[in-house]
Image 1 (tube, rainbow, N blue to C red):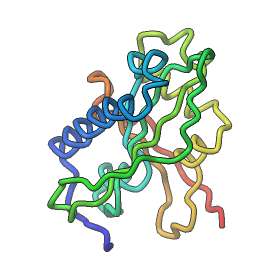
Image 2 (image 1 turned 90 degrees about the vertical axis):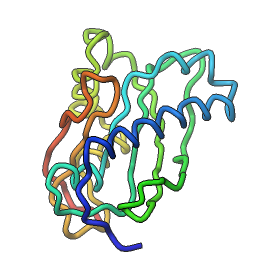
Image 3 (image 1 turned 180 degrees about the vertical axis):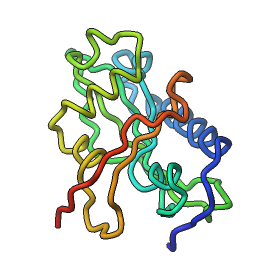
Image 4 (image 1 turned 30 degrees about the horizontal axis):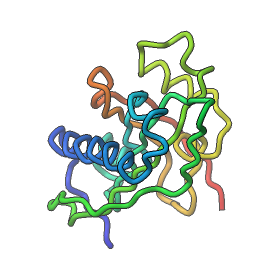
Length: 174
């Protein structure tokens, strides 16, 4: 599928947020064993990778949307979801690309001093974590020769909506 170079608007971000919140609910219907541990512990939803960069600069293009749902970790039940959930969007102006929902539990060490500040929690996670998914969100660009930086845009909660939470240079890995 070719990239769309249509601008990502606030309305588009709201549509992605709506889809993410719907997927948040649907996930616990598919995986009820996680509901009591994670349903009420959603910390943040962010847009990452190429679409986030396109939102910021309008030049990268949109192939798909990568939306991350971050939850407060619960030591009683680890969230061991490895595969993203893929859905087809209804964002017509982008030719209805797929949306990948990636769920991650955030270790409490990133939360303790920032309990009520999702911006600081996500920034601390992105700056300090050595986990591969964080490195991919922040510094790696696999097989993307024209991508020089990675961007993370806040979608939820409201105080971080449209906020640039990360904007940094990438390192090419092949």
